[in-house]
Image 1 (cartoon, helix red, strand yellow):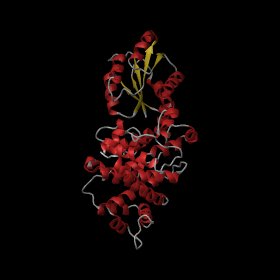
Image 2 (cartoon, rainbow, N blue to C red):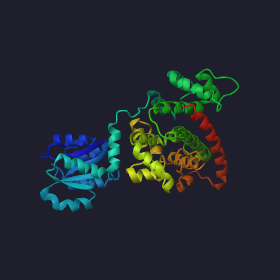
Image 3 (tube, one colour):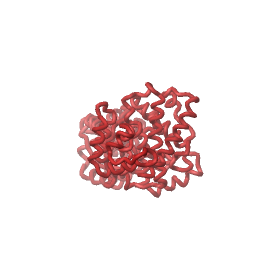
Image 4 (spheres, helix red, strand yellow):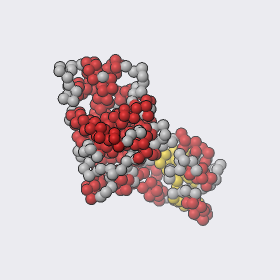
Length: 406
């Protein structure tokens, strides 16, 4: 993650760079307010904080602050105003305009580092740690290749088989799953092509996705890992059920993303525990004593939840925007863009249903309510609920068999 400094020529950028690197961020600069807005647009989603000098070379820093806070894309980015002491009376004006903090020039490295940490809080520091961690899992090329073809109508089962057969480990895992009690027919399946013919394009695609993703994340561990995968699989399958029941109301362009979005919706939970196991374990231990869900405890204690962390990893993996939004907003579908709302809502509802049908992976973590607008989007009524629950129970059994092979 990056910190943008709008450069005042009187300040030593060398010292700034050294200070910011100690906090785990990368320093980027702009020479004026106009350039700062251009940089924010170019680096959208990557800038965690702006250091803004009150008297920039070409633009008054206060005007730049107003421009940043007046743009809905950037207004949530924290801004620290750097003011010469004779500008100090204007600090209140800066706060009213949306500045998060002010620091008087001259300042020392320790003061700036402390102000950055204070302004960003735990959330910012967690994002900084994510940005500089060297052993964060990377997306394997076969996953990227498969994701690019999820909604390609011209992509055939032969194309998929050829892609799978290039990866020996993936082929072996698919054969193991295809010969499991969840799928096996009267005879043993001995080739990927036979598995594809017997199971069909969609099923072999979903199995491939699970095999690739579970292998990619094998270095990460979490309590109840087996249940984690059962829940993730169940949410992926249930999202498909909901979309199928919605019929024409669910956009065809998003159908190919349903299973993968459901499978990855809790990706951030794995990463959070990997990085902050002690802090996250404390939150697990608190669940029996509170009415809050896990993501609410994360937000309260860490300033960030697993959905935001998962979305960060999804960007790191360069996953499609549809999957990134499903991960980011599966607890808050009303925040999703209108074009992605049906997919995000399907994952949101699937997560709620699975958690309340004993397919949760965390004890005492049962959401009490769901977003009603998501339910209305699918135009279903209470008469549909028993049939959906019956399907989810079958899905859960299939997910348990599948997860045991991962």
